[in-house]
Length: 343
Image 1 (tube, rainbow, N blue to C red):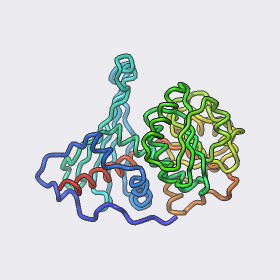
Image 2: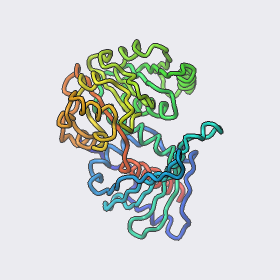
Image 3: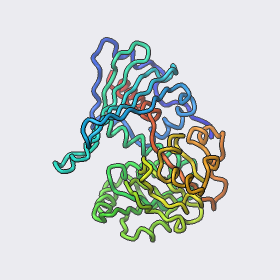
């Protein structure tokens, strides 16, 4: 699949703010700048050309108390089209739920890679929601059937509306979205909110308490949960389905069973998924598949170096764990759009 021209203005945006203080880009500004369609297009055009020029050291995880952590996720680019250093700083305080605060907070800081000048600071939590969903949307654009009609969303947390919007942006054939959550009220509230928004003409949003029933209907099944017991049983996936797995990031977590991995052709966002994802690590250990059976990573799919969906009956599985590469690309789009509009 050929890449498309970069939508960002060719002018060097750093020149527009020379001598100014670093910009703070709030979560409200992020929402006004970003949309899922434009970020999917940005990833599609940029990932093949700049990925090899981006350095992404292993993220650092520092315990700051017995239950809390500080995570540092740096990256920097040697590409003239991406003249930045970026660092995502994340705090993990799971006990915050007892005082009505989120357990995860994040900030993203952008610097010039030519001068080291600090350029911008932005809400890292919102940025991560958009970039995570748009990676899944881009993958479904490539791997899902072009006649997909039904999206099943498993989970109704903060990421769920972003995933729904990203899949809808990438797959205009979708006509129905069915949402499931352990707490059904959350699924119902999300479905009603999306239906009331009138953002998607001709798309019906519903909730359903029967997980197995709706999995059988899904042309695209997207999962964003913290499940440690599989929610998606592979035997329930319909022929031609696309399974999108977002939630797991450690070996004890898995959103689908071995049968889903065995029946599907598996793709990943990047190679870290092979050692971090509970679904894949477990499948490798049990001999369900081998690493050599992985179809491709996302960049290989975009460039057309590896084959994606081979026929209409094949089940495709996409597992993502995230990376600093898509963080810095998302931050680039936010920063350069902000500068273009404001200066």
